[in-house]
View 1 (tube, rainbow, N blue to C red):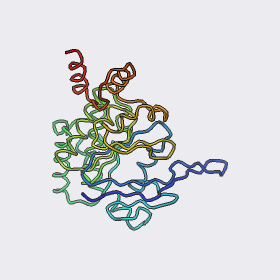
View 2: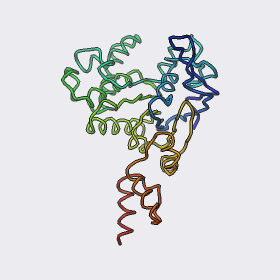
View 3: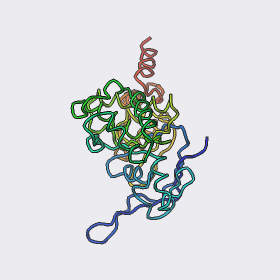
View 4: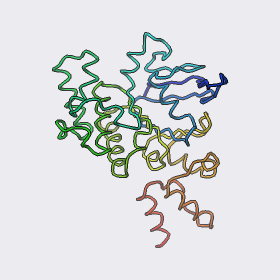
Length: 280
């Protein structure tokens, strides 16, 4: 697969009120393959949300280059195409919902793109089916649960037909049920529809569901690989202010007691199998 997003030696600085500079990203190199599901994990202030905003040109790099489907994000003539290629979903769905009826909200972005009405109708229906919200198409968004609102916000982005969707801490304000709904939706978009998904998160259990995990700390990428591989580096992650999934932590504690168990049993089912084997 080819890379849909490529960062080359990217640094980013936020100027502060005293005219000094705060380095948030430092010489980042990263490629995201089209059709992949990548989680970017990091503690607060690690630079992960800033990185997310670089991916569809909300921010421009202070140094280096960000390429989106071969387009330079610093080229103002490419901004429209870049933002059609990479859609963004943020923490608070209320900030992205603008209409009083679900289907009207999902139609808002395509209407502003000048899409013909018949195609808008098809896009809205398709997007709502994709996120499992079609039966709520005539509902008022403010009456929905947090997870349902976020799925409507995702549908609004999908209706623009992006090739990649970036979710910046999109489950942070949700309860466990809402988080599970969004993660189910994300996996479906990736697995059934082949959409590139980039999930920015600080939740270990969410990061563990991705195909690839990129870990950030203090503006640097400190780990990059499959979740099974990355989460075995327990001490390194803890030194960066991060934890590991509860399953890995349990197995890690067993290993400290001299019990030889693998650290790559991330899911509840895999961990249960390891423990059952020990007991038998």
